[in-house]
Image (cartoon, rainbow, N blue to C red):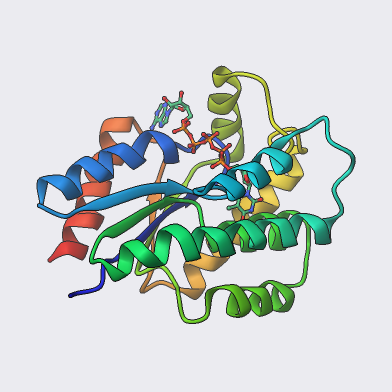
Length: 207
Ligand code: T5A
């Protein structure tokens, strides 16, 4: 049985990850690929509970270490119960955010040490890394304005603009460090143009 491929979608707040996830899923299914769509933090009952705690802006102040460990705890459950079983069955996994988000938000946004994140990444993931990552990039104000239209802000969305600028820079650095895996698409163009670029990236990958 050929192992499935692991594709992740990344980017700052409101850049269009969720909007484009179903578009990619439909495109893969049209190419006769079975695909599971999932998200982080989340994807299992326990991991979704951790997500709820992480996003709750009325919770007690969460320490940076607690936040990082909760994210990796959720990830460990997600990998064991959803991602690995699907890949092993030959099913592709399409995930809304993964560990690049940790480098961007906890590394960039919260200034946590990259070496700590790397250590946890190796512990929790072993050799598992995405095969392909699409990074949707847009100026921070555009993403925030789009997210605002959608409703009340969660704990992360309530951060300052400077936090999101650091997140964006850290994402762009990840793309520079891993050019073979991370494909960058400008998200401040029309949805139709973003989706044209997505077909280019995924189509090239399929070939
Ligand atoms: N987190 C996560 C960490 O800190 N560390 C980690 O390791 C991980 C995994 C939750 C939070 O968790 C943090 C980061 C996050 O803050 P989330 O819910 O996935 O993660 O993140 P959000 O960014 O909050 O998700 P959003 O749903 O807000 O953003 P999306 O999915 O990027 O945007 P989407 O698709 O909902 O689009 C927003 C609006 O814009 C419109 C859409 O129609 C929608 O209304 N839109 C466009 N409009 C015009 N032109 C386009 N090209 C458009 N694309 C979308």
